[in-house]
Length: 255
Image (cartoon, rainbow, N blue to C red; front, side):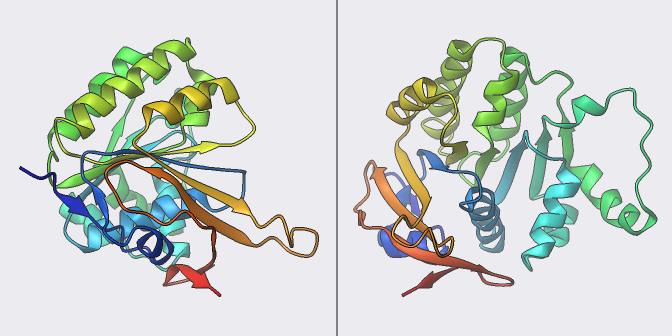
């Protein structure tokens, strides 16, 4: 039996991966700060929702409300998917706000009322066992018909009690979520931090997508580029392609 495949439906990725990728993949999106990793992850999520899949978003760098507003700023309307229960968040950020009395601006109250129904809040994401329990349980609910996205593993490292245990957690999630549940697991990681961990992480991953600023024109402007460094089980092009980000369209190719 062949493993089912999927296409990202993101223009630069589909150009570089014309046959799509297997559903049982652990994929990393790596690059410097500002190269578009989170935007790419947002569009991957939106396209998956548009084609009827479920999306589980694990957030370590911002709140679910903030992420929904980021979707909106890109022109991606996700409130219908929140209402349908197909977009869910594992919130590993808001534990920092425990015990603090914070009021949202009135204009955000309605959006937040939809978002909060789709949030699973982790009391202590620094504990790898607790994190495993939340991710495994929510991933099991969407096996074979969804994807898991994590932003970012770099931030996860800053709060982890033991980097080695975190690497073991990622390998376990690959084995169970991707290989057993057939749910693609896609994470982001920032260049320039925890390089020794990053090298081990790249080896454990089925695919690596690199983002960068074009070094040939970086003195004049910041031009974003993407390539597929590795993608197991998939025919892929390895050249760098240039892209831009447009509201309502997401990532678009630039010639």
